[in-house]
Length: 342
Image 1 (cartoon, rainbow, N blue to C red):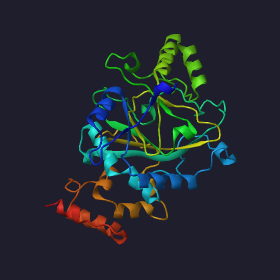
Image 2: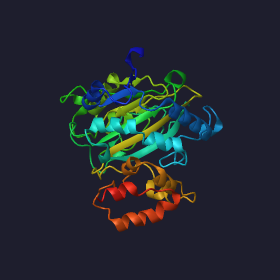
Image 3: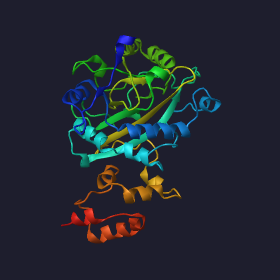
């Protein structure tokens, strides 16, 4: 198995992804990089997550069996560093390179940092200890991903642990070109799609699909034969797509892995929804952390969550002053939006 591990390639400072990395994502469905997020922010996230979630092998960890943080650490967060990583300009620049659009045309739709624990599989159908091979589009899209050459979103995993300590590498299947049998349309031969039962556990999922259709069972066995594993270290990022075949593999018993999942989409892709409770619900928090963040973040960061940018037809002087009245006591500066009227 060792020869099937993929090492991260370092990104050049201030320039984002290399042409080789961009081409790999567009043609093969993923690229695995290092250096997009400053080490100081990565370490801050590790400290936050370590304080927030239980230790590996603990009784509390045994009770956490679901995917995601269950709202414990999602955007927007009361933790400044979490929000800064989520909308870091170098990260957003990389997304714009992959989608070939301006950063102003990008919107955030997911940011969730969560732990996975090394444990013996429970046997439950939804157990994520050893995941079945899958694509992510069913719980992001109301529709189906567009043709391969016209992607409208970028998914990514920011790793905050070291695979040598905890295991749990993400397995990915490279696309081999337009005629690759692994990537033919429509993408429906996976649990939870086209009326099939949702089963997350690998062994039970594959048994179920093979019983439904032996040819599909053989085809999916071919996906596992081609999978490669990311050799992640803290700060490494796997950039992939909603239509990339991948899965989570088991962690070492008693260990813990932190991963920060994010998704960015084209602004006009309304069929891609938010993966967790959104920004509006966050504005219902008594501490007003969402409002305080909106008031003090950058103009570009506001735009990434759907706040109209300067110069947008939404704005009038009266409306800008109304927004100023709402957020001004928290530090909002409306000057960029006023200048956009000129």
